[in-house]
Length: 113
Length: 115
Image (cartoon, rainbow over all chains, first blue to last red; front, side):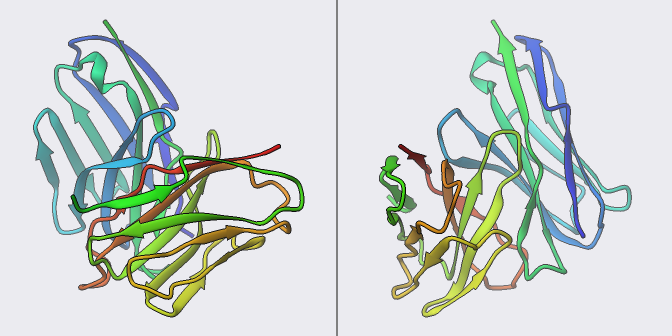
């Protein structure tokens, strides 16, 4: 059964730093992996979608990588800003569960001014 | 604007009541999903529907019911059988062409509290 883990659960860094959020999954048979952002009390905003055939995707200051063989994805945030403070969730769409998303518990990121 | 609209934003339920959460999308997406989010946990799938007039149970369907009479709408009813309904509920949708490789989009959520 696919399991998704995000470590650390919380991270606090000074403004301006580059940082990496981690997501690991146990079954490499995935269609894609998606990174989301969630602000407190709000819904989820899709940040990046990486198909299983891709190695990385970029959007502005965000870069997500995917290594299927090792079951890992990273979300790199360059030049962090206080507005980046949110919870970041990753989810994989697996091949053995009728295309459902399997979710990590998220990393709560705080960027200190 | 195209998107997914959930209402209400906040909902309060008394013991023994059924309540219905609304989810509407104008993205022409085939599939719609309901998730429950509790603090410190990943999202858990309640129900999903891949086509009108058809829906499937997710991992935690007990105490919930849904309908899919229109492509645009996928309401979720939290029944009195759900003993711990206080949570944040999220609705999502996506196109199902090519089956697994499309992006999921989410509404802004409904926070349900038992009073």
